[in-house]
Length: 421
Image (cartoon, rainbow, N blue to C red):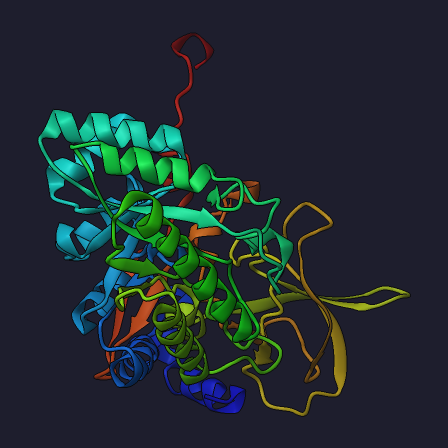
């Protein structure tokens, strides 16, 4: 959907959204989430039907958002314990969950097993031993996916590249560390070696890295077969499907085509049976579904720039992505502003040199496509309460899926020693 159309639909519900709560307010559109999922599911059904989509809960763990995806048939990838709780609250069955992470407490693993979670990602040897102990204690037999790291070049922001040589994630394949963990998994009666996993990062702007990842991971699966005599059932290529913030990105069909073609060709070359394909998209399913509506409080002129200071800033949106911005007031974009938040640090600037219509105090500004990671990374900087979250339903209704916080909520768990009262 083009920005003008996104602006128009916000204007259609402006009174319903702003009258009860004012700004700042997060606005999500249910139909966007459903359409994003259906587009990916349809592409997979056409090209690789033996596949399961697990939404990366870290991208947006609001149970109201999760419940929309669950209603569509999407599974979930969750980190213990909070994300697991969010997924269960949203109505997911434990069998629909893949538990990930790299330093889960033994008690968290035991709780997940007792709940009925079956698939567990293993990122390191220590985690595997914890899982084996937990499986013995609970008399469960979890299915293990080994997370490999092929030390790839990943075309994305360095902070969200996860399959590089410098990354903390995954087990190095070339050195044999990944194989050692696979061998230990295969030898343990309490767990089952079911699959291999690789996540190359977030916001991958190109299809070739997915092909490279598939080849590397299938090569690892072939090594497991040759050395351990085990054929891998699950190939998990993670997520990373990008959202178009400030330019075009590969569409879903192109990414799925690259993955499907590469998996089939490589499996054939290596004489491997076609595995069940797991994918873990996050940003692609919810990123474009959310908008933060804010109010301009101050227009501040300096000798160098003009600041449009909003009532929310980097406390409310995830950092370092070039989110599209548009005014809900009419007018041609003839002015340039540095769009900033109100917080007490210099880095609280959302974007520099943004073309917008002439703005005055009271003007409404939308920071668009913030549906991924912003809710999870929102902070209480300057003790600012977090904004409410509204869901615009497919039938036109507007539902509160997170109430607005108050200062009391911000300090709810704080305590003052009795002698200092």
